Image 1 (spheres, chains in turn red, yellow):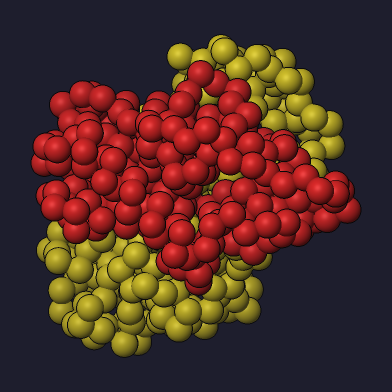
Image 2 (cartoon, rainbow over the protein chains, first blue to last red):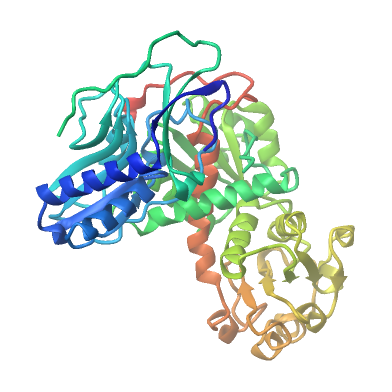
Length: 201
Length: 324
């Protein structure tokens, strides 16, 4: 994913080391809350949720837990905004490696914004079975929710403007690990930087 | 990926290789939905599709219906038997009356070549050609290509023999166009009486099946359309089988990992021997599954993403809460 046309980078929010520490901390939190990892499935939302879920699973193992299975969810067919996104989204397919009945599913995505992606992901997941509970883990929560959805595991909470874009870049997809804040190329306002929200559990 | 920039799917001939690639890729992504515990996704909720079939069909009609249901479109199927067509209503009148019910797409099969093109000129809906006379059957060619691509991982450079009734076959025409656009090498084979004039400009023609099979990566058998065989095209079904039927012995002339395709319905013992149809190299049932995936892809690409800029007049916006 390059910088979208009409946008430019305003600030680096995380470098590779910080992203790595953030994911390790999130993995510990998930393990702490769900010590019975044998009953947990991590499901990444395509595209970047999938490598993130894989990294979390490895970190959970390193932290002493059982490595949970990782699935991938392609929510394209469940979206409510097909007419507003780019024509012909590429379908990559959903792959849930085991039954989710009675298990805890941790949905993993890069950025939590309006909540509409998570809504679509919940609808799709529920068509695969009846999990005991579904939790949500995101690297960045940037606010502006349009649906009553919140994350259970958050890497970093940011206050952002709607016109801005938060990009999580991963070496698996983008060649390098970085989290960046983008703004419209000609709309720079001076002196304002996004600030940390209250740390959340 | 270049996407699919057209409003209708009328045939393979006007498509670019990129359009074909886009449909095949979408079908590959959608196939997985058929293996889910709940084989239904809401992608086309609130869209209405009319299947208008003026000719007999099992596979094509059933797979369009399955594809519509899996994608949550509302669909209705009208066949000639039991409809006003029998009372003498013209194609255009039938289509205009159906359009008054505001469908988003009409899937049409008709015995007249060009019937879907005619509807595309006069209707607001997206039109999909499900077979028109001896002209084209684009979704069949696409599902054949998907089957080949899955097994061989490519289309470019494959040697494909198409054997049988070329004269009446819309499947052959669509396949020749598709395969040559995608860089495959096509050989056609039929008795001289069943070779339409001019087809040799599209691909080389031979009257000897052994020659066509030599070194083939895939063989597409065409049905001998017994219902259209009124003109004495060959002396007898037995003689046809002896000269042009695909037998195990003949299959050996092709490559070891040859694939045998047949669009169905098969005439066992005429164009294809039973042992071949049920043999290990036969991918005939894969074709049927892929047929559903291809039709899902076509529906999804024509209806799912909306906002096509080529649309002459935007269809009236419908409420989304009508479905299921």
